[in-house]
Length: 563
Ligand code: ARG
Image (tube, rainbow, N blue to C red; front, side, top):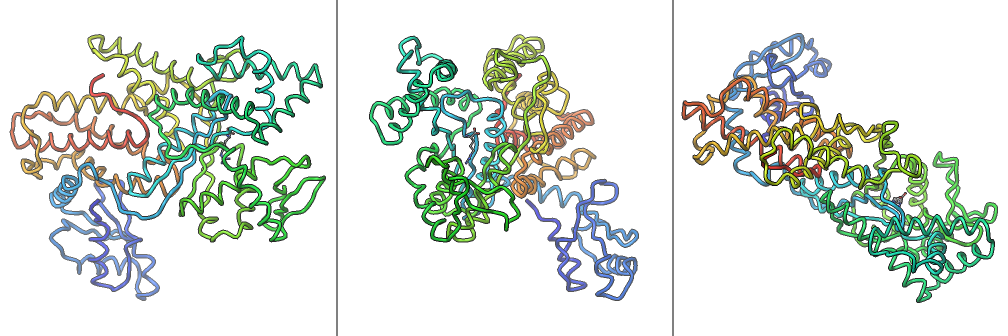
């Protein structure tokens, strides 16, 4: 990124000797200039009115990189020399290319996301976690952080005692190699019904869970089998979404690490007994509900496993940030866990680095996708519906295309991912296939379509597109200049994403880049008959296509070359 704010602030600082970098703002409306400096905050220090300050600076600052400065009611508006700006931005791009927008960081960032539960379906609630987490992971990584993705599988709990019992009774009726999760859910529903009828069955289930905890070979073997089969099922979705994890560790991994949590809390006098359970009171941290650490029957709970995971992660990864991409239903649970984490004798940085990246619900429009069990919908069904819809649209628009299925997958999956990432994550999302598939809306099919159109122009040109053939004065037309400024913003946008852990800054930027390209396309003939014009325009649109692709890839969306 070329830091024009730095150039402007140093020109001002030469005259007044005050650090003004952070006051320089970008101007939205290009007719008013590129960057503005409000002089109001200087007024007190300099004993002059903002208008006087702006006027005097306006006449003092002279620099060949600045085309014009205007003093407008206390603001200094800078018009950067356009050819200079274009040259700087494109040269910077050309020097970095694949590494464009990258930085150097030593810090480690953990991003925990997806975390579905073994032997239960991967539902739409897990879609958001996976999609948001994956995008954040990619952006941190692109920015050069040592980024580690973690899948904290829900593989622990009393339900496994029931599943084991159900499997003992009816295991031979099911072929678990095909759609294992559906089968395990069926077994689970069946055994639950039986438990309600028959107390002795319930007792056997409890006994199985106890055996599992004690390491009984048969029970552990079955539990492992359920986990492996479930993971294989989840992998189908991860493959579709292009998601991989650096660390896959289930909650069970932390079982033998919990006694340490309990003993540290005990040593620090933080544990009190309430109705037979051991709890940590959090009133003094403003949290009314105490955090249960050990239940009255002695069994461990979710929060305790999370506390053990915090100890483990701090020691193993030495993180500066540790993000938990989990739905807002768990807001309180994370508040409690992070509050208790303060009592674990950890270095402060590990506690401060904990962050719950919460998100709203994914709602389905009435009547659509309702399945056997009420409103319960599997992610796989949604993705397949979207892929089918993409296929229909492509068949209509371009029936000649030879790899229709591959393209439909990229477009269909991309549409779901993008619509999930287009708004602030905390908002509830309504799943509306028609909206998210529009080729002319704020959708990923739209971005992909613009990308494909650039690619088709580039295919029609048979010379190499090189920066040295660019004439900067051929890129002065309105939208060209806007495109160049957008290109230079890419790194800033990525930094906004991580500053709030909000991928939508990038999604919106990509829509802006794609629509601005479309304007440019309507304004000029890219394959102009004039060679200098053609070479310059081709270079510019090549850069745009590359950024659209990199940006979409960071969100977790793949680009087709034709569609
Ligand atoms: N498995 C849990 C669920 O599906 C989410 C786990 C979230 N992560 C955590 N560290 N507690 O609700």
